Image (cartoon, rainbow, N blue to C red; front, side):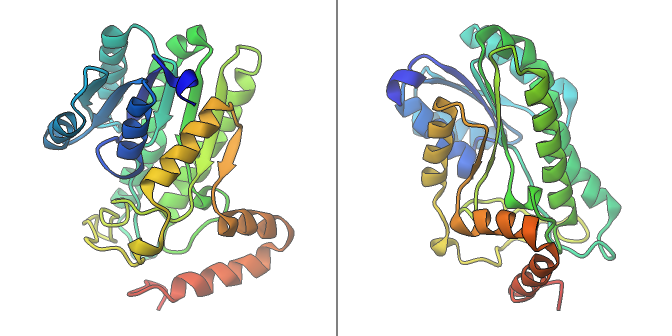
Length: 270
């Protein structure tokens, strides 16, 4: 894998924690050059200090703002000269019933998870076509099966996958690879920062993080899939089973999913 990534230019959105951080760390170890954007300048500076290499470039940007995405891509291109891989990783989750959630929360999730990927991909597209590179979207099983209490999150991942599939076909004869990745439940900060019905961070995860796939393992799977120019990756057996069963027995899976999420601590379904 190191041979593939040596001197590759990789842009990662939302890279200061979780899967994004692990992706950056592993790519740097594989001799890639990595550009990261995130909203927090303090976290970006901490990342620079922790990883400490000239092959890392950080840029403060909110991916829900198109001009900031354009600025990130422009600055990264000026720093490294081109773009080989774009990983649309920035994301936010939510947990609330649709009938109770403020519509501003739905918009915020869609702005970051979907429009952030649109803005960054649009800005980087010319360079990626020139390098015959790869565009990646970090999706979820929620992009295959709507999840109760996560209506905005599921909607954003369905939209992301539809965008990437359409783009893949448009770019079919350009040499560009477009892929989307669906991790299972992964140990990361996304559930701690998930929004509640009023748009406040819930502050704690309903899942046992020590039982989940590590961000490092997830990052390694993603980077290997990029090197192999995969189309899609569903990482866990549970995820693959959910997607397969949903094609054959959607009504049954509706009930199974409902019962699964009803058992969560403080589930909004109770």
